[in-house]
Length: 70
Image 1 (tube, helix red, strand yellow):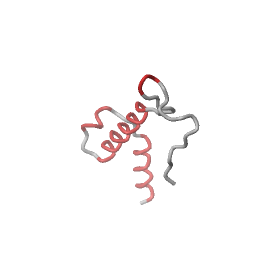
Image 2 (cartoon, helix red, strand yellow; image 1 turned 135 degrees about the vertical axis):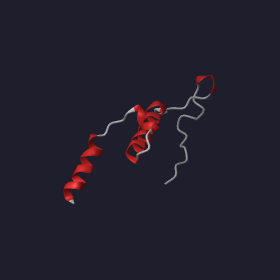
Image 3 (cartoon, rainbow, N blue to C red; image 1 turned 120 degrees about the vertical axis):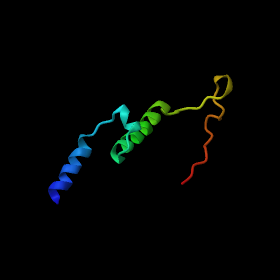
Image 4 (cartoon, rainbow, N blue to C red; image 1 turned 90 degrees about the vertical axis):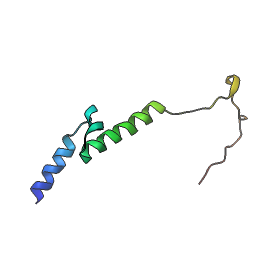
């Protein structure tokens, strides 16, 4: 039984994203396609370090604290 589990783990570990995963019916390929899409979206979105409003100026006063959820 343990040998069977190790074989499945190796199959998952050896799997890399392929474009054809979007059109596949097996669970592993669908998961790879979905994970790839999420990572790609997050990478392309990037981060916003500072928001500048209209006319390129900061809409917040210099020392204004923004409310944060704790």
